[in-house]
Image (tube, rainbow over all chains, first blue to last red; front, side):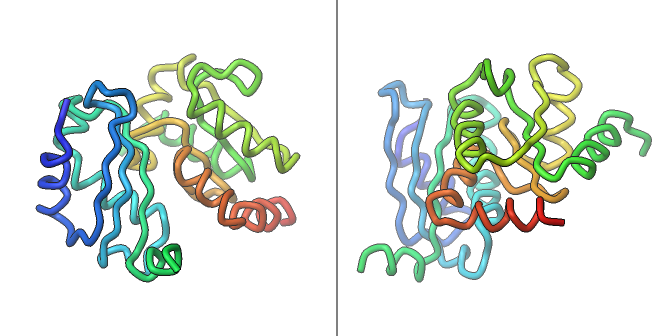
Length: 84
Length: 107
């Protein structure tokens, strides 16, 4: 299992993060849903955006601290459109 | 590097306009994410091919190396890796999946 703070730390080490919302889907601390907004996503397709997050979380994914990960990723401009 | 599994996967991906690597079969999916992906594809009424990675551990491992993507299901449209369940779901919601399918199948 992993904490939201640790997830944010891992992400922050490899990506500039503007928003990171975490949701523990089962209460067990290993099934997570993340909403991540990063300027690094600008101009990139979903596949590339998700790859960046997977890469940033490679360590806790490979050692099973994160067992399942549901991702929603947005560039800041996509995120702004959603909010308006 | 000679790698029979990767070659076999590459051939399938290239020969099927819509190819889904999943756990189980469309009628008997063995995982919720695979089931959801099948459900989305079926909603468009388009033909798609599938392979059950649980039936062959070498494919289960090979497909992850092929796409450099850690999870299953994996969907390929027109020979290109599109993503897993989350991405397919999001493309479906945004209305971007149908044009991708139509353009692949129209060829």
